[in-house]
Length: 140
Image (spheres, rainbow, N blue to C red):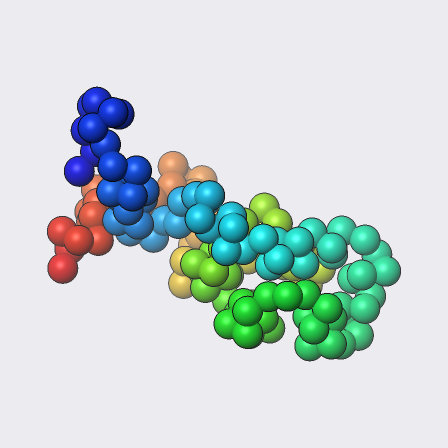
């Protein structure tokens, strides 16, 4: 539980609270460390010559990066939710879906299980409702 007095708050307990937000992955320092090479790979796609190499042979291009096999497979699967779990930063991963010709809205809608149209309508009407499950632990 988060306390008002930061001197009495255990940092691990505090950070664990971020994992209890349904449908949300807070980009913490731990995730940043875990996803360093994944995010560097994604940023490499900012260069045209790298995008061409990537498009020519995705598996071969990934071999140049010291990512985990699970990270590489999630990239190949374009499983953006899994990539976030594995340390990906959505703004860096945008380079992957942009290279695939997808807009941010198109890519993010795949992460919600909604159609692009339904996702756009939800966001245009103010986003997800604050009502409902607010804690993964409490929903169990």
